[in-house]
Image (cartoon, rainbow, N blue to C red):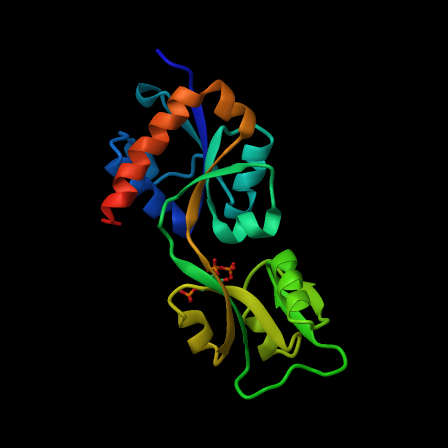
Length: 212
Ligand code: PRP
């Protein structure tokens, strides 16, 4: 019996697609993956242990080595810049980061404000544009900010575009496309290279079939 590989999985909207991907790659995941509040799920038959984490925290667990590998959105990886290797683009959970705001509005000339869950990405983006803005960090429901006068613009994830549309916001600029990635702890990659390479090979096969 091989060593156990610990994988950090993002709870929420990426989770279901990640489970489908793993099952297509031949991993037999128990029904607990479909309906459970458990935060640790052991699958001894596959030599796997899963940690169910907040998406923003996946790379943190992997960086600290409490998870060997993890599935993290490119948005999180850009924002957090954790010391992990990105091994594979899983091509799931397609979305993008964009600048949005109320229609036909200019940014405040004197003190433009940008609300976001991604302060580092937003800061870097506006700096590259040569614009100095005040970043207001929020933890969710970012689209509220321009509606209630907290900010001129937001930087947020757009998936279907429904949240923006239903709140009367428009997109001004697209910053970067986002998909989920398989990341690995550098030390784990040295120690558990055989298991990790097998995981990558199996996932890569499914991803390259383009069925997802
Ligand atoms: C994300 C994102 C947008 C929304 C975009 O929020 O921040 O609000 O999804 O998806 P859509 O384009 O399909 O409408 P999430 O639902 O993760 O919740 P949050 O407000 O807590 O960030």
